[in-house]
Image 1: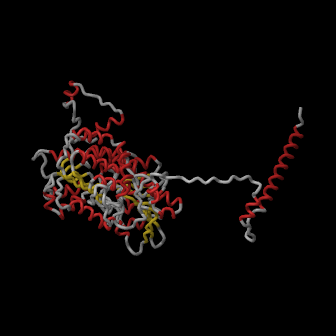
Image 2: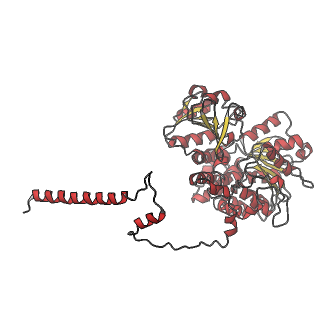
Length: 550
């Protein structure tokens, strides 16, 4: 049996030996340290480590055969930025993907100042760079994979050409998903001219891909206000081309045509509008007796309200905030202005990540819903000094005023999820005493004289489509609804629709939903004759009255 005391002595001796060896190693390497008063040239440094085996590196040259030309055109400014800055920039410059080719920051010239020609010899378009068309085509192909219902509609109706003779002028976000809609309309027989409803949301490569196919697109990311209206005018005012249908998002195209080209506007057969702001403008025209064409309110269709507005915003609000600010939501004090479908989606996402969410509302029904969902309903002035993030979702104007912005704490974030850029009083921030500092694409520091900084995203414009992306599948639902609304208005017999604003027929809403159920392998239960008779319904729908609220 071994003596424990001897084992302890051996362990101590071994430990002492290891410490001494460590000291010798440390002493050896400390001699190689370059002190402030001494210098070691590369030769001495190399000889000091001559005992360390080295391997001569083998130089291998990577060859890019097909893509070599495209890589050589990659922006050189990005190469001069820091690595972290480059990563941040690439994740926000195009909302389509982090690896998008939309960032053309090296080319500061306006597309209006140069003439471009597509492979068919046409120059009837104005985009950032027509040579990006190949990349845009890949983006569109990716989007098509998750828009199977819209592609299915295209295949079913392509032989009938229900839009033959339709000349559609559109003003929407120009993205890969919208491109699938536009190409569906073309496949169904329509001629299209298109512009962007938002100066920041255009995917340049997608605009190029559409222009390459012959669609007259006038849009690029980062347009000025003057560019925005110029692009709309170019879409409408084309010699020998009389539009007869409008697809609008926000009402700007409708407003421009009504004001500047009243004779052209009177010949329009129908308007399809998908935003709260645009629908509000249409109802104003109708109430004043100035709406001389029938219009379809797609925004208030069930498939738009409950899916695009609710589920889309539930996912894209987080994407937009994370890409631009890298903010952590846990414990943050967040105020969401408006508890409609967009507000509900935003609040659900933020609450799930641990944010402390409060609501502002003017509608007692929406306010009660917010309370029942576990949110505090407050006045913005009551909490403005404590809030970390403000998100507007109302479609109204001056929801966040300059006085409130003055009282926000340092580092607060302000952004908008409503369509219009009027919700945050951005104009009041463009004064001499405040400094604007661009942090990255779509992110600005507004600096007060005392040094306080407020972070403004997308200059108060729509956050998700300006700074990030939106789920393709949800946009498939909206796009299918828009396509069916255009087909309905264009083919409706005279007298079916008066000069007023209409909701999408319930049967059409249900058809859009049914097309998308296949994706989930969902199987609907069918009513028996006896059950249908009992409920007073047609076995094939519609299954709910128009006044039903889902």
